[in-house]
Image (cartoon, rainbow, N blue to C red; front, top):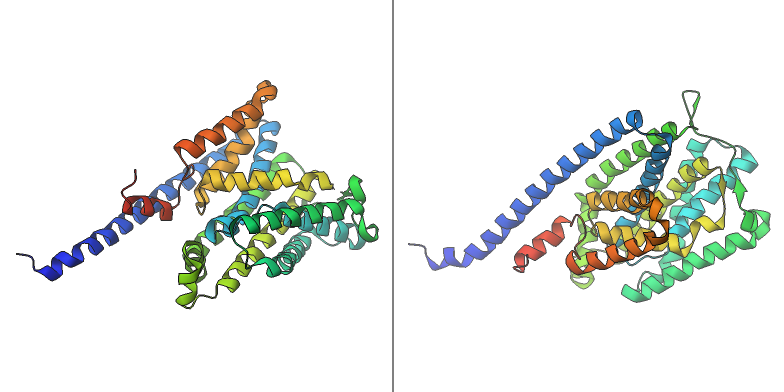
Length: 340
């Protein structure tokens, strides 16, 4: 017979077993998804036209941006709807320094990331105590402040509404990166490096601290987590990645203007993270592909594309609020609460 002590431990043991099983299933499904994605991306340049390769280049750029926002929104739970501001800072840093000093784009990619990271820390430090809708509104304001500053052409640096030209290109062993296939390899190589780094970060002490802050900041602080530091670090890293991505975008487009970094662009990134599943790296990749590739598939129905997009958003929120690929944390919560 089981004694009372064994009976009392049973629910805890079952919960731990369920969490371990969920974690193993999530890891295996994520590995399978990434393997399939890698296989498709390797084959694609050999079978697709330049047009579709170009579409996938922008899918990769948006995947980089969405993954950087996922650190802020998904891992820490901070509502940031001004992420394109840091993207703009990186792109304009690249254009300005390239024009005036002729610095190599690989170096500019690092400098742009550091500049955007510093801007992310400075701009968000005074508002780090805000939560939920209040933080959301303030980040919208920050996005508009940056965009209007670029339009006003301070000190003649940003080119005003017309923007700036970027005449330099990435070079690898003397080869200039300029064709759609070249940029395809560059962008998705960057995505692969970022994915490896983010998976390691999720499993690190910092990643666990972020999740504690997301679930309950008060409880996290009571256990010794510096919540302000955790939030500031997430904003800084997310902004830095967005800034470095701005260099790739500037090199690809060769001309940048404030029209590329509007509030609508930030809303799109926010929607990608929510639809993919907050905190879910595979979900963000999947959602960014859906948001970039599907509109091109529906180009023949251009008049109705936004109608399809809005309908898809509504249906997702009703029937699958956890996102296309929910994170392990969401799945565990649903199991514990008896949800389906």
